[in-house]
Length: 507
Ligand code: AMP
Ligand code: MG
Image (tube, rainbow, N blue to C red; front, side):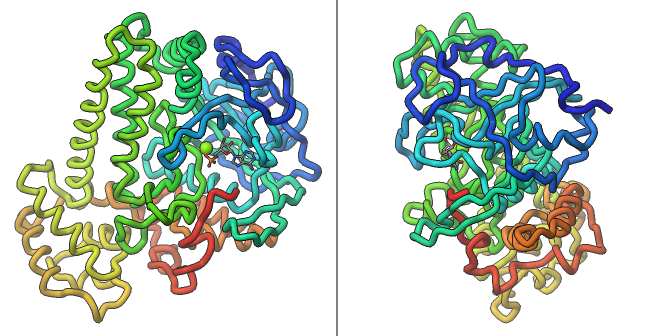
């Protein structure tokens, strides 16, 4: 097995797109550039705490290289940089954002093609604005565990290779309420085909810099969408249709497993349709479509669970506007939104067919799903447990599912039994259980599970982080030995706890 430093490193992004002539430097506006060269900041006392063996195997490397993974001197072939991008945050154009606390080391071969390795939390870049470029342990654990868990759920996502603590403390105000405290710093090395986002294109379009926009589109298509071309409207439309489809597919997966991203700003939308930038995300536990984990978004709940498909469409529309300057006839771009919503419809139908054990979804099933959505909201009902047990029940009786309810005395028995009977008839007493179990995971990274792992890790004990990491490699398997502990509803202590029901962008 090789080490990171012995790999062949590529820098296609900086070789092929316009960059900043200044290296490093203080936070500032950067014009006409897709990136700025910047050196990671070394950690004073790094320790490797979490390591993804699967990711390492994919890169054909063995465990190690702590220095490189924690901000140390780059090795030969690396040419580290921070990417410039903009974005719409909570519906408003925020102009330049960029990699404020992420630094790309470079690209290497993996068993799925060339991938980019990026350190999150390795210090200041020209895009750090007023912040420090660092990341804290709690959010780094959340990113490491969740991105790997999403991968094992079969959901398109960026990955994580390592998490190291830096030995440095950083100041954070978790809820932005004036209560600042020192927290341990950490760095995650994350991995993706690229970290190009919708906002990477938007910034140049808004600046009226069509030349840079065009270069970035060409780079993206040549390297990441090699089956597409970029010379005319038709070719660009076919590329954009692929992005529309992958974005719709990603968000449908989120709806299937109850994942709420929490900050679906256009700078957090990957061009590859990957789940990216794990911040104040959460998993709905009681089935509340209006829930958002993000306290910054409580007033409007723009990024609430049920709104995610619409928001993905809205974000896609902003991305299409950014590409419009490259079109002779930009009116054609509206077709791409049609592709998005058609794909979303198909994906959601097949999602419901999977969750409910139908061989295929038909128009008559719409009403059954609508009724189910209403019933799930009548009293507090755990989404994950409900669908998992539904995959197993032998009789269409709500008693079989009572473990999914927070208060068994309040279960609307008659209404549920009516619905279950309709479902039972629909599946002719033989739901496709195998299909259901592959659509309805048994284990997901509930917020309180991550918080328990964080509480221990902050005291230096990473064993729970490792236990969850391993558990979530097989989210659809029974893993009976973990059932009592982790196939469980949210404990009462977690109901209103920071980190469980309340998260912010502070990380
Ligand atoms: P996010 O909410 O993670 O998508 O971040 C939004 C923007 O804020 C991005 O440009 C980030 O790079 C930047 N940002 C967030 N946290 C920090 C930090 N600690 N230091 C510098 N920039 C940050
Ligand atoms: Mg982001």
